[in-house]
Amino acid sequence: MIFSGLRYPIIQAPMAGGVSTAKLAIAVSKNGGLGFLAAGYKTSDVLETEIKACIEANVLFGVNLFVPSNEMYDEVALQTYKNQLEKDFPMTLPAPKWSDDEWFQKLDLVEKYKAPFVSFTFGCPEKQIIKRLQKIGCQIIVTVTNTEEAKIAYERAANAICVQGINAGGHRGTFQNTDSVNYEPLHELIIKVKNAVNMPIIAAGGIMTGQQIKMLLIAGASAVQLGTAFICCDESGTNKVYKQVLIEGHFTETELTRTFTGRLARGLSNDFMKKYKQQAPKAYPALHYMTQPIRQEAIKNENPQAMSLWAGTGFKMIQPLPVKDLLEKLVKEANL
Ligand SMILES: Cc1cc2nc3c(=O)[nH]c(=O)nc-3n(C[C@H](O)[C@H](O)[C@H](O)COP(=O)(O)O)c2cc1C
Image (cartoon, rainbow, N blue to C red; front, side, top):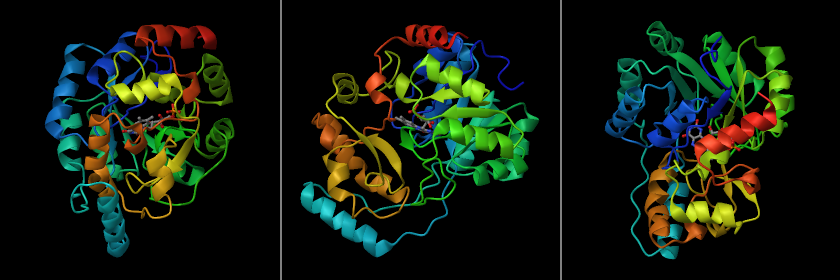
């Protein structure tokens, strides 16, 4: 069984953008869960250092890669949005660009170091890529948001799927950058996907308690993946203001937005999201690179209203604990 090497079927979600660290992944794996590294937006050199740290710590770990997009951008809408942002924020923004996020270099790295688990988001890699990694012992996980995507991952012989529900923090892992959103509650989605494909399922999205974990395992999941629950752990790389607003309850809601990156992602509903809701075009990862200086400046100025504060709907239950204590609490509640 794919997760038989784990003491507990609890996976720490990869969280690109600074939250995920090797320290976080190692702490999770050392305490019986499965820690994941987030390769997204990092250089392959930085990723390599993190992989080496996990190997030196002698723990099981996973690496998550973003599958490059092939979408066309509406250049006029992009330029209009850029002009508007440059008017509102006193800075020159970089020209929007496409990037494959060092896809091939990162694939080579997970192969070179034989990462025990490799997960993919924003698409399903071709069968030969999956096969190539499986041949050297990697377990392949593909993030899906509906049964159609699950069937593709099944046909391409992934080892497992991570079924991401509507309550999940961060980007929707849809294969296409789409406006259509699957609002099915997670446990219903798990049951539906389980009936459609015969493969291990990881449930993700809005999971904050052991009771939820128990319910999803009963619904048919083989493991659960939690992101938001780990954002405020001592071992995370989350910046000070991000942690502070989550713990102190400055924001009351989350919403899906494409204002920061051009792709739907769930985060704390702040001024930036509200102001640019109508204008932000569907253009990922172009907007990610274009809005990056605004977000970096916001972190410097400790201004949460212009930061991307990714979080799932369960964020009010976040507990700022060391990983060990959080896992112990979840395991006890779930009666694992
Ligand atoms: C801050 C943050 C960053 C994330 N970055 C990634 C990522 O790099 N790759 C990925 O596959 N999923 C990413 N996700 C989504 C998670 O894999 C997972 O679906 C989500 O955290 C589950 O919902 P929860 O946050 O309510 O637990 C991110 C989530 C958050 C909160």
